[in-house]
Every structure is written in C-alpha cells, then in structure tokens.
Image 1 (cartoon, rainbow, N blue to C red):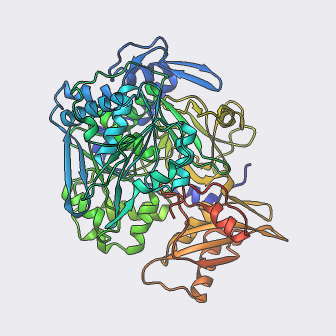
Image 2 (tube, one colour; image 1 turned 90 degrees about the vertical axis):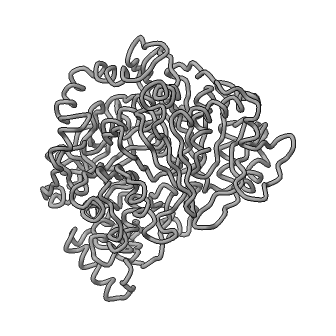
Image 3 (spheres, helix red, strand yellow; image 1 turned 90 degrees about the horizontal axis):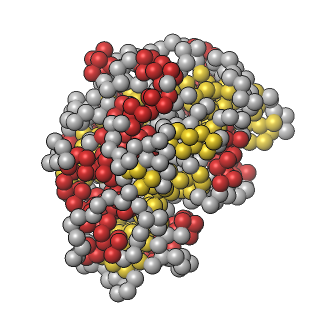
Length: 631
C-alpha cells in the first residue's frame, strides 16, 4: 500500500520548539545522540537502563531472540515491588509522598513510600493467609482507590499474576475474564462512586461468579455505611483479612521472564485477548519511559488520568512512576463532575506538574470551550501528554495553547496494551509537529512499510511495524500462542501493530488509526482519521467518526457521525458547510456522502471510538465483541 496521503498536510512544516531549558535539564539530553548510542550497541543501551534498578541476581544476557520469542535479562532475578517501594524506603524517599488520592466531596488520602510499602506487605500476607501463592491468578475489579494500587502491588510482591478488569465492565465480560484466567481470588469493592452515584460493583461480581468454579475467595472493600453483609465462608473484608498478619513480607524472588500480569484487550472479533507481560523487561521498559520520556523529577506531581484497569494505568500510574520514585496523583473524579472545571481545579489545588490524558478528553474540553480552564491557575504544569487515539492537529493546538499556555511541551505518545511501554513520541525538548506523534524513542526501531515489509516512500501511507524486540513487549497471549504469533507473521520479521501511519521526510510519524479503519472509495485509500481530523477542524465540530458504507459504484461511500460544539445546532446548511469544508481540506474523494449529527459516539472506556460498532449498526449486523464499550 503506497497510497499517497494528503501530501500537503504531511509536508506542511509547522513546528513548535520548546524552551531550550527543557532539553538542557532533561534526563535524556539530545535525542539523536541517545538514538545513535542505541543503534551502535542495543544491548549496552538497555543494560545501562537496567543497571539503574535493583536486581537480586544479574542477567546472563540482555536479550535472547528466538523469532518470534524474546527473553529479556535472561536468568536475572528480581521483584518489581522492591524497585517500586523498598528501594525508595531505603533511601531519601522514605517519607516522600508516593500516592495522593482524591475522591468526591473533597475526600483525600495520602501515602508516603513507607506507608504504601507497609500496606502492600500486610495485604500480601493476607493473600498468602488465604492460600494465594506464586503463579496463582488474582482478578482485581475495583474503582480507582488506593486499595486497587495496594492489591496490584501485593500480588506482584508474592508472585501472583494479577488480572485487573476495569470497574465499568458488566457481569458477562467480567465472568469471561475470570474464567479464562482461572482466577483463584477476586478482589472488589461494594461500590464505585461516579458523578455522585454509587455503582454496585459487588452485585456485578456476584452475577459474574455464577459460573466461575476456580474462585475460592472474594475480598470486598466496604466503603458505604451500613456495611454490606458478607458470606461467612467465601467473602472477606479488605481490611479485616489483614488482622493478625505479620508486618513484614519479603519480596518473592521472580525470574525476569515470570509472568507479572495478564491484561485483556478487545479483539476486532472473537473473545478478548489476554496479553501476558513479564517481570524484568516490563520493569525496565516502564521505568525507562517514565523517567526519560516524562522527565520525572523528585519534585514533580504526576497525574495520568487513566484507570489501572487499562495498560496506561498499569504502566504510568503504578509500575513506571513508582519505580522512578514519583509522587503520583489519582482521583475518582470525572472531567465533567461536579462541573466542567473539575480537572483544572485539581491541577490548581494539587500543583500538578505533569498531566497525561487522552485526546477524547481534550476534545471534550474543546467542546465546552476555553472559559472553564481559563478560570484556574494552570501555571504548575510543565509537561502535558496524550495517549490513546491519534491527537489530531486541532486538538494539539488547543491543548498546547489553552492548557499548556504556549510553554508546556506536548508528549504525544503511541503504544498498545501489547507493547507495555510507549514506543513513539516527541522526546522532551525536540521540535513538536501537530498531528505527528513523533519518532521512535531511543531503544526502539519503527518503520512504515507495505504489506511485503518494504518501507514506503515518505508521505505515503503504510503499515506501522516494530522491527526489533523491546523489553516490555508481550510474551504471548494467555492460552492462545497462535494468536500471538500472528503479530509477527502478518509481515515477516516485524511486529505488525495493526495501525496505519505516514512518515514525513523528517522521520516524524503520523498515526492514522487502525488498518481496518481504511475506507476504499473508488480505488482510493481514505484513512478515517484523516476525514475525522478535517471535520474536527471546522469551528462547529467537537468530535467526529467516519465509516465506509457499501456503494454500488464507488465500492464504498463515507458516512460521518458528528458531535457539535456547544452553541451550534444541526441544520442542512451546516451539513452542506461541512461537506464543503472537507472538500476544500482534503479534496472531493474524501467528502462524506452522509453526515449524521449525534450526541455521543460508541467508545471504549479508554476513549477509543469503536467505528466497527457504528458500521455494524448502520448495516444491521452483529458488531462482535463489545465488552470494552463504555455504554
């Protein structure tokens, strides 16, 4: 596939250059120098990163590559929690704040590294007391509260493999994940609190356990008064289960290749995929990217707005930032509750310095306008980041000017559940290009190729591939290794990400979205993200999603679903204006044949638009696996 991609857009050399202080003071320094060092000796590069962490036994080799299987830090022994907790308790960070939590109504809890370690060790001993041992699977289905973090770290402490399921999933989706992982214990809460309402998590767990024979115990965090009654033999209170256990729990000695967690991610068809990540490589990858990409310093307060139910939360709320020794902020508050100033108020109140959020949130804020963030002092921010869908140029501009005040670099990141760590971004201090995530980070080789693996010319659309192993890569799909192998055999000698991309002449990469999000109109490949970006660049549009519909003449026609900004109303005139806008922006071939104004779009809970759900509904067919759908 070498379809030329809107060359005007790709070649339009618009850059923003951060203050030189950012590069001068960053952990990485000069990007090109670091990247050249990696290319000269990849093993030495990763060894240097790994040596910054504590190991019980050093490795025999940095990597053993037996295509398509990699082993990283072979025969090394470690425990990731010793690096996230004990390492800091034994140095100057003992009384440093590790975790700040804000709930609704102003509730706040603060954990120093010493206090967090103490809670993790006691809960780890509680798990041992009820028979959880190394290699057992533990399902965690909780709201975003400190106990969720404690439960995950406690599992890792004793070598149990955690499988975190986002607290918004329904009973059937939860049951499928419990059954597939053969979980021995489920950890949950009576309720989650969302926009002032209590969501009954325990009732969902009860339904999910009707056909889950491997589960022996359910541990329940009881938050509401009066306390929920628990089954006397099977159900245990989160805090009561810790009564009488020892305060000390030495970390289990783990091999670098022992499983750390399973995380289920939705497939385009069929059941969700259980992505398996292991201890050593994942620890090094998330530590390295947290430190060198986000440039976390001791006085930073880092807020990743994801949930630990997603890989972003695993990697950039818990394991990566805590391995660096960061102060991490988490909250149950949503962006629009109690009002649209909720997050900006928290940034002002907590003096957040690094914000990592999703394009879907940014576009939601664009929809309600600048007046909300302008009410608050956001001067504490020094770095702002994006994760999830491609950050379209209009959202980049808004984020940079309105939230970053023209001074905060944007770290726009590309990665996947399967990659474990972010792989493409614009490193701190480098020139930023709206619409382009950036270049591969030092340590990673990425390219844009055709279906035969041959690099496509600059400014042409192709498949995004990773050309060599990286430490935090998935090792397999749980009980489905054949499906894992497809990542590496779709295009020979490459990991095929399933995303389409364009590489500019400067090497910067623009992510266009999933490969199955291409619409072929009259023989032309049209990327959905390209049309959506054109629509969103219109002053009336907050968000857009486009799909291809069968057409007897063109093969496909384009249908757009559009959410309008506040103050704009649907009309035939506006519809015609949008058609004209796309025509002048992209050309007649990309003009939507239909435009439907909608109030919301189907999204995963991590914020990705599920276009295939729109397409299935439009065509009256089954959309397949929709367990990750938000509503």
